[in-house]
Image (cartoon, rainbow, N blue to C red; front, side):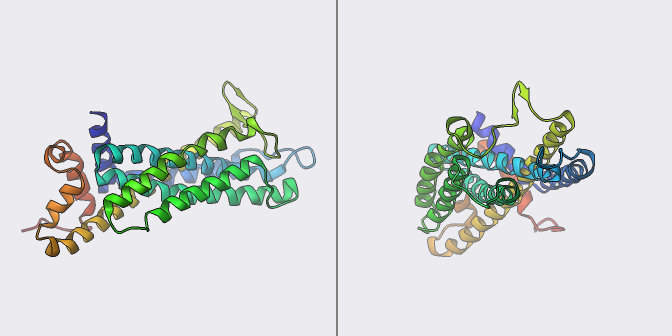
Length: 283
């Protein structure tokens, strides 16, 4: 039941209306974050006692790291669901989230290096947090590379799912690395119930994290719609060779039979997402 509800939620998210709502919310959240981070939140104490304005990079660096965790958690869940159900929509979900996760992981590393040059005096050091994060990036670049090894959708999905499930083991290692090992990277500034940030800084960081999470959801909606279009194009190309309608091939990829009826509302929403803007009813 929970899996079918998740499938319907995916369908609604990739519908045009859901996509627009997510885009507007993400844009509004990022605008508020910009104002809060640059003008409302105060500067830190000047060096050498503090970081001055340099600390403001935290309002992008921390959300980028959080989104890497979130994206790869979605890959983990989507991979398990694909192996359990064999439905291509779960494989699409995992692939889309992996692509976005790789982007945000790379962004977190780049921003950390920009911050580290003036703070630590070096662009890079083999600190435990940095090293495990670099390994995480390589794991999911490898995940995307595995998807290019075969043209067989089921084989590709199974191979990628295995990497997505095993690779997620590095996420808790990255998160706990500052606790397990000594290094240059500071410990967590927000560790409930204690928070070392000033209240206005904590609020700004919370707003930026919410805004970037909405951005992730919006990018996921876009990428899932593109993935569905790619799958439809492949089905239409294979239809003459296999002697089956493209719609039947798509239904088979998404489980077919009784599952197709159970996920009907999700399919309808996905169909809406695939229609070009301004398209009228088909005759």
